[in-house]
Image (cartoon, rainbow, N blue to C red; front, side):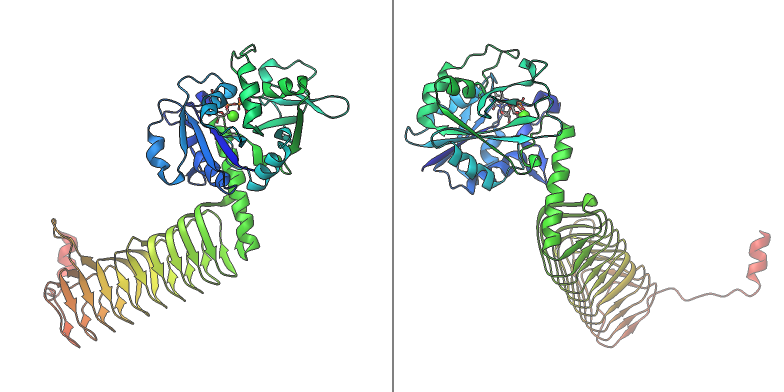
Length: 453
Ligand code: UD1
Ligand code: CA
């Protein structure tokens, strides 16, 4: 069976109150439409048609890799009208699957079941929901067969209590759609051409309509406003947290966990509350992430601990390291094994070899540091001269005293020591001790005079 998918994605979504098209609002860091297209692709459709409005030129470049056929619907005259716009592009012999772009949590298995159900007529996905208000209701006859879908605005008071709703996912042969879609009218409260009217039309002509219920109603929730967007986001995050927990990651509170990317994790990693993961994250075994950490495109090897309130971006961190609390590791940084980074240390575009320690208040930018070197509190690399960035090279086993300024470009050779408070402007040789600060003056009894001023 050759499947062609039609994704309905036109319109701003008035209830979003936004300048951004509704389906470009994100769930788990990705536009809802991207999530829907990724799910749809798992069915290997022969073609995917996406119906968008006229204000949607931005879509084309965003979705290059998806190779979709863009269908323009200038005026949003309803979901039935939207499918009609796609009809001329469909192959007569194909089977069509319609999905809504504002329904990002749907699973591939549900879409597959729907196409199977629609083989000899119309297949649709319904769900029993705790609060059906606002959604299309599935009307069944006394023997349980689907008879129609009635929209909220057209509903009679006795139908209000029906809690089986239409998800919007529907499948039928292209032949069926070509025959029945043009018959739909906008004779309803909203004056729109409803795709859902296909059901009553099919039933009246003796075409079989099969509704399968989603196993979990949350999968088919649609997003019409920002409140529903936040609800769908939480459901999505809960799912991801559960997946990670099944893989052997402990998550202190799944309702305070956010992943907006992908995570590969070894065993026995743990995440305290309010951790945010973005981009591609790879964790070895037994990596511990403290509360309020933000990690963006980060690799962390086994047995490393990232303490609370640390932000790490585009960086690679070795085994048995300790980073934070309150550390900031910026792009281009690699920490080898056994590195210790303490509070208020900022590191950018730097390579720290194993055993390096920078325990307090330091800035290391464009720096290379050899094994077992110690960076004292308040030490900084002056990597920027107001115009260009310069590198600082520090060898193995170097001691950089507290509050020293290393003015780049500069090389501090292995085994050397820089005295606290020094401003270093010239290269330091191997094993040298460099002290660069004004000599201390002592005025005897000066304390009393000072206080009497
Ligand atoms: C729709 C269904 C309703 C179902 C609900 C599930 C109809 C008439 N109603 O209602 O039965 O319970 O979804 O979430 O189908 N769109 C277009 N062009 C249009 C109109 C809509 O492309 O002219 C797209 C929208 O971008 C959206 C999707 O179709 O992604 C659904 O439209 P929406 O207006 O949100 O329909 P609902 O009122 O939610
Ligand atoms: Ca909707």
